[in-house]
Image (cartoon, rainbow, N blue to C red; front, side, top):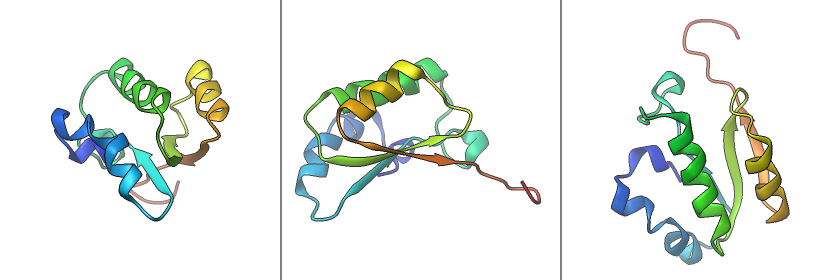
Length: 95
């Protein structure tokens, strides 16, 4: 689920959307620098992920960029049984 491609009202419905899926969901919100559309502060992304994860949701994975390391958020994700995917996005040659 590419939350960066959704507007605010659509993002609020993510837990409801995930409940309807018959496959495991991967949740991400990509920054512009990583090929996405999110252009806000990191604290806003952190709050978004925290809010979704704290709800009873069937998100199976979250996709965090390798440089997005927030220990308390990672701990919350793991407590909920959600797995973390680490991404690196390279657009200009080898990484």
